[in-house]
Image 1 (cartoon, helix red, strand yellow):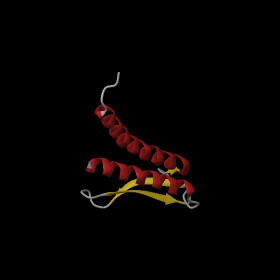
Image 2: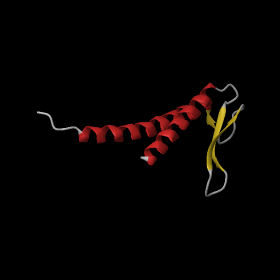
Image 3: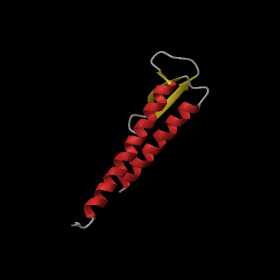
Length: 92
């Protein structure tokens, strides 16, 4: 159960990050990366108002983040739906 909540929360944060990237005027290029220590790193999206080498275009980064977020949310809800379907009694 806690894994499902964590996945749903993670999916929601990915969707919100994607929307924030897409709606930001100061985000023409995005560099995805990891910040923090190796054991407790924090995934981050760094926006730049100019196109940078190694950066991803705003629309691409936003679309990938939103798609990844929805994939996580669908994985959680699909698992719950199939478990609920299996618990239903057989019908003639």
